[in-house]
Length: 293
Image 1 (cartoon, rainbow, N blue to C red):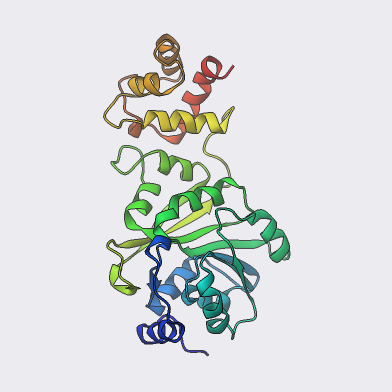
Image 2 (image 1 turned 180 degrees about the vertical axis):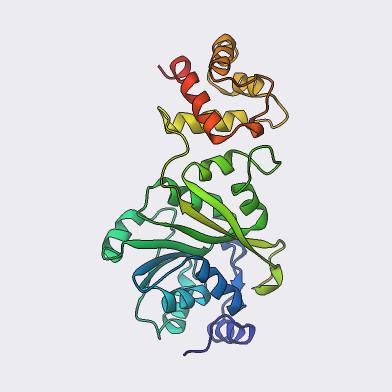
């Protein structure tokens, strides 16, 4: 068994050996607690029949634990300076493939075809860079990847927003964009003290599992999300006011919006944060003929 990468001593040794300095712009915070890494990997339920996709391996702290648990790991690293470090730290593991690429620009579907064709069970497991957590998640969720789900660490506040339920302050368009496709739950919180350098905020691990069935079937998914975003444009405003001010020609179409709301039994005085995903789906379909036909 090799010495864990994720201890303060070993992390410092590696950084010193390579003269590595953290780039704030890349949101680099490396984990230095092996127990937390073991727990994260545990939540992904991996076997040697599974594959893992990682984003931002850093110096390989989580990658190493994934390599021990899964059949194969494909890891996306944007920072060229880390490639020689990873080649060194992960040299004991022959089942890791590092892809030097920005995952937001990468053709992930194609990379899965090339690298993970034999795997039926694929999980995304990552300590996501804070500054691009949301775009990465939304890309991975909406590209319809053949994955079972994700176990991802992020800022606690973002994890709370994604997993929020209707009627709470954290619930918003991000909650709905993710929960439309995935079941979301925060499985652990992670104090800032277990990172190097320490971030300013606490983190949380979010487990996302692909839904067997979408919560609601709609005519046009992109229109559904347009209605959702419009409804949360100004949180204090009623759903009627938000839709009027945000949808194209909404002011002139007030009567149509009112009749769509009436059709699906949603009071025009309600606020967006009180509507469930199913209600948003019904509302989008009722508005569709007036705004999209």
